[in-house]
Amino acid sequence: MRNSSTNLESTFCQKLHFRGRIAAVVFCSLLPHHRIYSEESPPRPNIILMMCDDLGWGDLRCYNPESPILTPHLDLMARNGLKFNRFYAAAPVCSPTRGSCLTGRHPFRYGIYFANVGHLPQEEITLSELLKSHGYRTGHFGKWHLGTLTTKIKDANRGGPTKTARMHYSPPQQHGYDVCFVTESKVPTYDPMLKPKKANGKTWDFLKDRSQSFPYGTFYWNEKGNIVTENLEGDDSRVIMDRAIPFMNTAVKQNEPFFAVIWFHAPHLPVVAGAKHVAPYAQHSRYERNYYGSVTAIDEQVGRLRTQLRSWNIADSTMFWFCSDNGPEGKAESAPGSTSLLKGRKRSLHEGGIRVPGLLEWPSRITFQRTTDFPAVTSDYLPTILDALEIDYPSERPLDGVSLMPVIEGKLQKRTKPIGFQSANQQVWMNQQYKLYSADKGKNWELYDLLKDPAESRELSNDLPDVVNSLSQSLELWIKSCKSSDSGMDYPSVGNQK
Image (tube, rainbow, N blue to C red):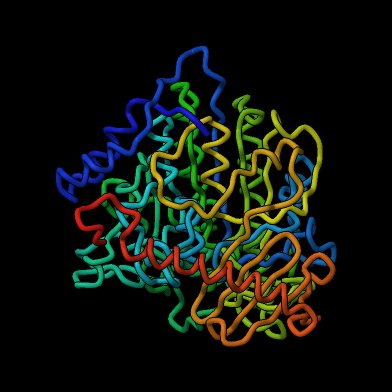
């Protein structure tokens, strides 16, 4: 990572103006010198961050050949790019992982401890802001879940004319996005604005008669803070892509690099799929056929986007990432999402709750199919992208991610910086080989050798007490660092108050 444009200083000084003139001056004094990109600079790749919601590690055939779900386009993406066998969501639930994607930092550093808790603070430095300051056109499409989108009307989980909505109002347009088409939180994965009279919260078959439906209660919002009312019927993943593709097309026509975040709602509950996508799964239960169908609907949009990138002749120069925000919902015996052999599911810091599909297609840099066992995490997005663009991160505050560029270039196979996780009472410290896990904030430890035992079937804490002691001490230091960040110590404000 190195140099950035001269616009960066003014961008972040303006962002921190609400903290006061002194705070802005203090922050701006930390920024390094920058250079402006010229025609002689290396071409800047387009960047796509695509994420599913509650998709299991074992749901894609490129990870689990026994999966019943048809995902030919994602499987082709894996065959053409880099497949991470150990790709981790930063948290076992939605909102915290999403914050890590945009900040490169663990969400406990800025108050997003769980889903529907906290919001993305203005003081955090996001990928969208950094890339916008370098001439990127920036857009966010689909789920947001990093704050409320309105303080005027009842919307989704927390939006409305309430103290909570005002406290956590943090729409994407305040974080560096030019274009937005977003919901605060979940929606049905087909006819996203509607629900049947007797909705069970998990699944239903698509509504053949929409006149008998009721409003779901969550709206789509644009960057102007207005509700979007057009083209909202049918498959939700297609509805989202219908906005993302024109955004990218505009950037292509204007010869601008783009940063597009596409966060699908599927296959988060309630799962609903249309006739075409449930047809291959007619023999399955209602829950299964709609879950499987919603994933196949995502896959269709992945294929649509890959085709479009090639038609624009920009596929080679586009860094296209795909992952999930956490493991699958529900109990393994009664829910269709799969972790394959992995232990745990959504809300768990065992592997099934946080190890997710992780793919990268970037034809100009990844010219043949590759897989890696390097442990990567969603917090790695920001340092990786900045490294690819040779941009310095404009702050001394701690980042939890590392650049994956050496992995992409085939020069690095072993992670030296461990990955820390916190969620509810659970804590994890993970290096290349070992995973230290606690369900009770360190009162009791479990140790696993993930190289030999990815299923976490053999607990080793009594056999390797020195390893437990070493890892637990490092974890304790990291947790203290997160607490320091969360208290506001990372922000250049008077008195370091949040």
